[in-house]
Image (cartoon, rainbow over all chains, first blue to last red; front, side, top):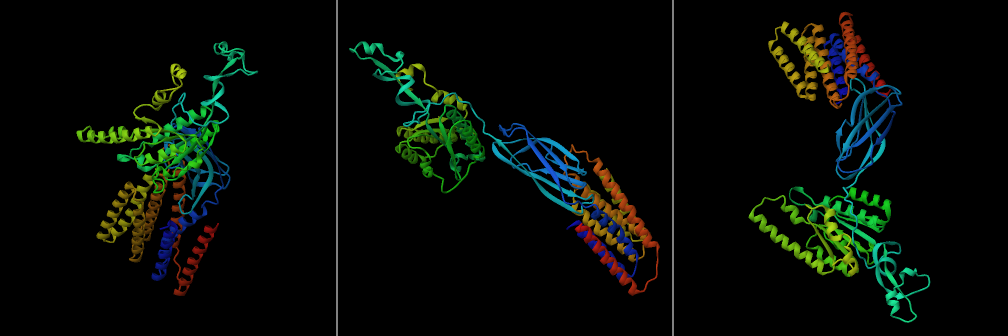
Length: 428
Length: 163
């Protein structure tokens, strides 16, 4: 019940009692309540006119990194006797130091500033505004407002810097990059011999081959290195990511996707990202630092989601990916995915699967019992069979035990080939 | 500071009513009042804000009943006023709990208690005047004055509400 209503009822009840009993003492008893009510209303807050300014120390932070939020509030209206200010902190963020809420009285023209520190897990967080509740001293009248002060905080996924990730696509773009294009021209690696043409640098002349022919000079040709289109597909399906006790491999998948995107973009490639979960979230392909920011923002928002439509990979929209481009799927994999991936490969895409190992992940949390070991062996065999089938279909598979660091695994499996292999023509 | 004021208010309200009823020999009511006071203090400690409203209604009802059976109006007003102050302070303490520990709430508490003191003094003065001034009116005049008072209070409250 409203406090004002309660007091009003008491006052009227006492007045009516006075009337019914014809005794003035009841009116006297009502007078302190009347005085209380009138003083409360007399000092009731007027329309709030507050100016709010919020500053976030770092709008792009790492998970659990401290971020300082400063707020300045200036009262442009009348005096406020009791003002409760509360900065609406998004769900998921934790206030680590200070408070996002303050109770104070603010005179006309007076300012109040405070600071608090927050941290949180990966995500995109919006600060919509500041909630202000003004009351009179007796709390009879409440004037509540939400003062808009928009800010955004992105907590990007953790990133592992990868020096180099080897990919080989059938089709490259025209710009020079680091991916062998299977086309002769200027480059580093030997590609073949052709007849010397005017304008070729003299140091390209292959003297040994030229000596074998009369009056014909031969020049070395090098393999051109260009950039390529890379489509990263992050699997956010519930059925592949959730395990016992709500444990998930998804954060590892996000880390892998972020690190790969960073590496591919650093190599000059055109990178797009598809988050495949409850719905399709497609980050259009692009180059450079701006694209890196876009991809990281998309990854910051990525969550596991379940949908009957996207429970299988058959709805991957292949029209998003340029023909014969490199598709990198980051997924713990499910047995049902085999057919779709083989079909995708058959369409001419170069497919690489980075698969965080769900068997090793879950086994680490289970008791060390013979039955568990036996079950793990069976599941392990099934998974190995699935990976072998993928490899036989020409799909590059990287089985990643998340107990190992991602950069070590990448360095070992997808790092630059040693010089000896480079001469032979690539990694075996 | 506020909690101390709350305890004082409860003791004042319940003590005044109990003293008056004890004088009239109503031991059952006195025991009930003492139990209510103890419960009120316990509720204040437990932060049961809702209990304060019930206690206020009981206290005002008993003050009204006391006036009807002819108990001393001074004690009754003191009882009702104590209950009003305790009820107000319960809600004030609830609002203070929204504030973080680092906030200096003493100025806010001081201002609140000052305003409450002013209201108490004004209320007691007005009530005392109303009790002391005894005029003989006919029933029709009392009816008219009461209606005027009710309408006046309603108009004043609605005007302040609009303002």
